[in-house]
Length: 91
Length: 215
Figure 1: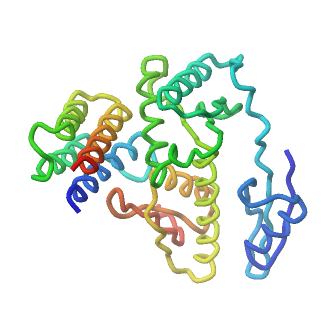
Figure 2: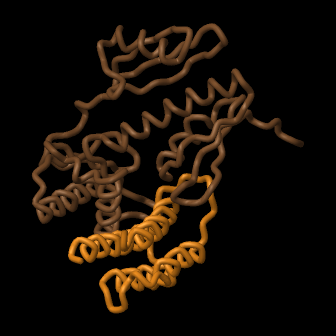
Figure 3: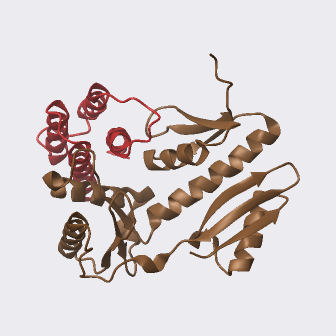
């Protein structure tokens, strides 16, 4: 199904950010790892250039680089996931 | 708070005995294992007090932040077109906002995803009003609380099995707050410990015999 791989990668990035926010206390995540997970999403060709999904992922990456709170990054990634769902239901 | 002691050959049996005495269902109680031996398990089962939530619209007197958080969540739900009651869970640390109403499944979403997103948005909106590291928890129909209770029970059951067999058990993949609940449930157990393996979102807790400390 188109977009499935993208959804899985975005969910992985969200899980990483939530793990930081929720503080399970059983892993040491660095911003670099979160940024890598978001870059993995951006590398997918199924995410169209100029789409809202790409825009939100870019914003999430900037937020990680700028040291924004985990909840802010998570919110932006959820927006990307939502935009992906919209693009899938619209196509 | 109502509680009862239960005894049985297994954890389930002990909990059931206490539940019958209390006349409660499993989803409404918290379970604490008092003692465990090969022949008998003793538990203390405490009824979760659902009546402590304050009436909607009244500010939590001691905590203005909690009331602000409640207003934020209420506003978000209004924009989403969701009709629900929003209350502050008293005596909860961190601040916990409870949403209750009818047909709120969509607000929880797949594996709690929508609920988690709502919590993220709430925390971002509260932003500078929260101290560094302080967070607001958003719960819908006590979904999160029930999940924590469920995974805690899974942890206790796994711990019991580990004590009997000596073999480690790998649990299903869980979210960070669920893994945290398991680590907390087992942290005081002298014989059984927990750790996590794998990568998000397939990170799993391993419950195994506690290794003797090397000095």
